[in-house]
Image 1 (cartoon, rainbow, N blue to C red):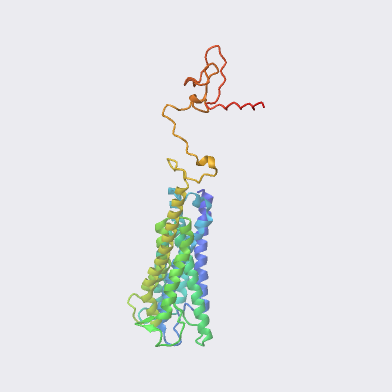
Image 2: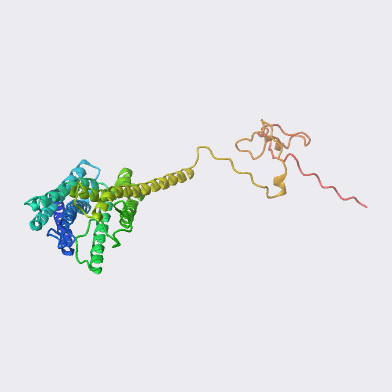
Length: 386
């Protein structure tokens, strides 16, 4: 890559990652999804845990999005993808995207100063630390995402779905009179019944939505790469990358599961199973693609010419002459190279009519030889005179 290309690609990675961080945090702050201030209903711990999960996840996804976009926009890197230069270029772009995603640390730490926490006097430091950990996690995943299109597609599709789900949850809260409230990462409590639809701390509608979306996104994101026959290992495990980022954010935000809401507990417990569901979708699509490719190769093998020609199938004779059995010729009755019939089928003019000609078809020296058939036509009988 030229020096000008290096500078442009690195600047692109930094700018896109910083822009993705600002856009996602702006949407979260504007809709009340992320809130560092004390909640009016006293649910301060639940809001704090949800905000930490969102901050960690946004930092990770911003790093991955910046690296993916910069890699796709750099044609020189794409051309040298399988060389050492390509590997180093992708690594440099990933590091540049992580630098750009560090904007999340500042955008999280400044508002988090207003949070009321009894266990610390510097909540902004904790929030900034979680955002920095998210950047590190995103850096590790981005190294894989720029090399595998299936992984990149899964991360982007999962991020789009989670933001859509968060917006729907906020709209539902406003419509039901709850107002703007902090939404959980990947959680939407569809029903308001506190007792029904729950089974051992698992919210059943939320479980169906979480597992079903992970399965569908894992299959759809891996389908184009499976059809292109990209790296099969990367395509098969790509379905679990997006849910894995969510599970990592939940684990870092609340490793002990203390002081969180019931819907948060359900989301924490379902996160590992969402990873398995996403893997199942991508593995299923990869297996189907492999089977179709094997069938196509078998069909192409059948169309090739075999080493030995296959015997022609017997057909029904069309005329009566073809039905007459042909006597077998003796072993010595092979045709000459320039003959159309056995030598015994020709007689010489010098030989008596009753005696067949010699086996050789060469005429006697000095005599003109006219070949006559072995079975000459019989002389026509003269009509009798009356």
